[in-house]
Length: 332
Ligand SMILES: Nc1nc2c(ncn2[C@@H]2O[C@H](COP(=O)(O)OP(=O)(O)OP(=O)(O)O)[C@@H](O)[C@H]2O)c(=O)[nH]1
Ligand SMILES: [Mg+2]
Image 1 (tube, rainbow, N blue to C red):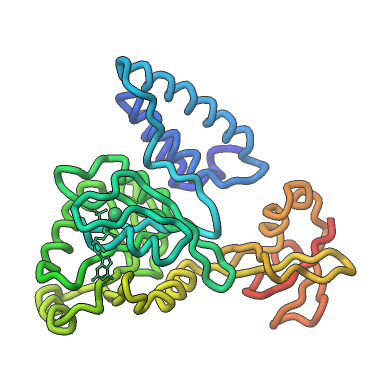
Image 2 (cartoon, rainbow, N blue to C red; image 1 turned 180 degrees about the horizontal axis):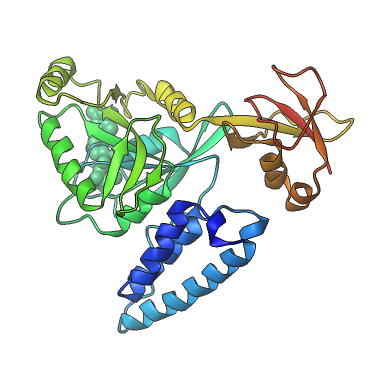
């Protein structure tokens, strides 16, 4: 595969690797390259090369830390599920409580500040669609480390958690904005398209949450905020403690990410409707085939689809765009 076929974010990370001044920066760029490289047969060799280089630079960074304990890169959370979503925001807003309420994970939730020190993932389900949620340490000028930038850049979406029970909402937003600017991250609306610009900025779709919404005077606080900030993003009210708004929030995530469920079946057999393959809207039969098995991806001849916009068992070609709920029989 020539570099012309690699996405711009990969080219960008490769350039960062070349420019990197320290082993730690080299490592960070390589990890970004590995995170963003499209995962298919054509890039397998490059992926192996990157992994080897990561091992080499990890050794270098370890040996630089004189006698220091071995540390793994905290920014790298292995992706699982249909998408990776990172919870970010000021201290004590309830990021960990939200992770705990939505997923199988049990992070530490506490009154004192800076409870969360390293990212912690958990799996959330909406309509059988698994989405990986990653909790992260609070934004703070003296605490936030550079690797938070990679953590956010690697995610498909960010969720900014604010505490609407406090009177300092404006400060929560402004302080977060300063940190994000420093990390060169711009938050887009929930339907925004993630992209990396030539001058090193990452633009990431984001949902804003107003947590602790069971508290008093919420409407008043929000209307003051609306007067102060003209283009205030929509703040979705939730309560991790009481459970308010969490179902709507899950649906918003899955819809904003454009995730769909597709079921694979074998000829003559019934499909397993309990474990869908999760893809992005607009994905094709070829992409599904590669996801099911790399051999099937390579040898796919045609597929038959059962779904709302096709007649039962309609024969379709490689570039048929799948829809939520389609059942697909792959013929290799
Ligand atoms: N009233 C109320 N309290 C909440 C809610 N969610 C979280 N809390 C409380 O807020 C405090 C902070 O919660 P955490 O989940 O630890 O907040 P965090 O944002 O992860 O905090 P750091 O990791 O320290 O940044 C705890 O005392 C929680 O019990 C909520 O929906 N309502
Ligand atoms: Mg926390």
